[in-house]
Image 1 (cartoon, rainbow, N blue to C red):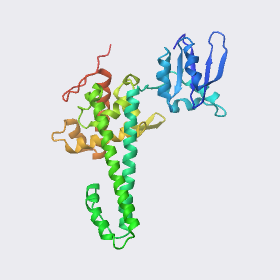
Image 2 (cartoon, one colour; image 1 turned 45 degrees about the vertical axis):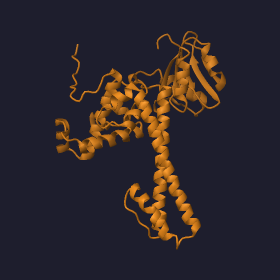
Image 3 (tube, rainbow, N blue to C red; image 1 turned 60 degrees about the vertical axis):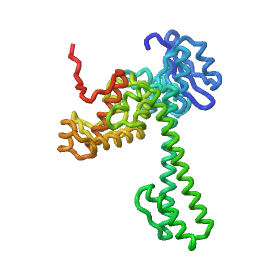
Image 4 (cartoon, rainbow, N blue to C red; image 1 turned 135 degrees about the vertical axis):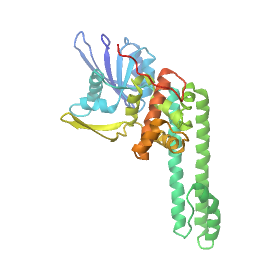
Length: 343
């Protein structure tokens, strides 16, 4: 950063705000640039350090500006917020970004590639379809329950019995209602087809990405977790260690302390909720289905609740994912971690 011009860039849909200070003359530059002129403006500047808040389209602009030879840093909104003084405007936001990027020890967000953002798009689409399918099936159960029809748990039982239930209710319900319920059943089945199609596309990405294939060998890491972990992580180099990656995912204990005393609480639950949920669900399968648990897991099962064991296993999986990605190593079930000797 020394000797390099620092620019705080507040991005928006139409007008961007730029804040920079010339360290030689002390001149403060605080200008607005239209979206269409942003790349042209930075193409004519000498290589600079450009800081952007990690918000909508932040990764796109980071890639575009980096292709012009600039160094780009994405900052989490929580890092920028303390430096916003006075009324919140585009100018104060750009100044806050400029100040935040120069603070010692600040954590940056890894810039995602186009492929990683494409993978996350598939995951978000699948997640939305899953929510709509669950809403529709629960609505079907509730609507038919009002007319005395009950079903066993699970979608398989619902769809195997729903047609006979509709036939039984055909004499008491208006035909328009029966037809509407049948259409709702078809919508739910269409959701299932769409979900399977997206999972098929994710399988293709898994087959083409060596990093995803590498971490898919970890017990408890399946198709969804492997593809989501690599896409969400961005650049593994953005994290100094596996524990830092765990902290970013909210899989480490929260801390509160005063007077020299520090208390550890439950996990912080910060970061990406979707990936954390996938890791915990995968860890739950490992904890409950493993035939020969490791001494570490066996001892933990004796001392702690099963939910705590699952979260601990999820944290271990996250650290392993980071290590395999950052060091480009293959998974070894009997690998023993050795701390480097102190100089």
